[in-house]
Image: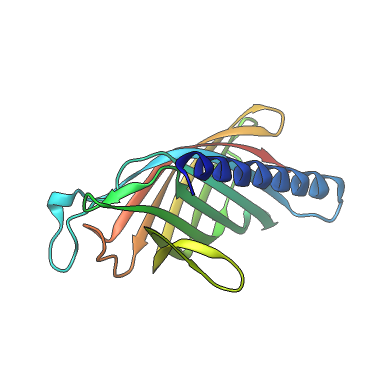
Length: 206
């Protein structure tokens, strides 16, 4: 797959995901029985231990930097408490130890606490579990009966803590500055066992 095709594929996935989430939001909005919740798409970056800070079994390679996209969805099931999920991935590939392309992807499911602080402001706190999936691209395709891939994945269990401040700019549309802490188990492929995602999302409450 060429670089242009790779970027086009990611853009297509993002557009389809946006359409799916917006359709779901409209369906819940039309239903008197649907729970309240949020849908959001955001952009940010990752802060993580530097290569020079690696110790023990950790490889001197940082995860920091790069542009990340993230999709989040949450449903409030009882007053201000609910559940939610998020996925965040790096748009461009980074180089592992200077030669092998790789891309981190973070998934998590959470318990959510989302009280309103005022008419135009809401707080969102989340805590849960998930996984980090690092895709290492070899440049050679391996095919199964279902699909062909040019990467292998290194997967690690992780804990997640998140916080965001929802600022309602127009109606149910909000801007949410946010930060997420990933506590990654046995993340010896990199310099440290944690990473921090910082950014902002544009969302809709339904």
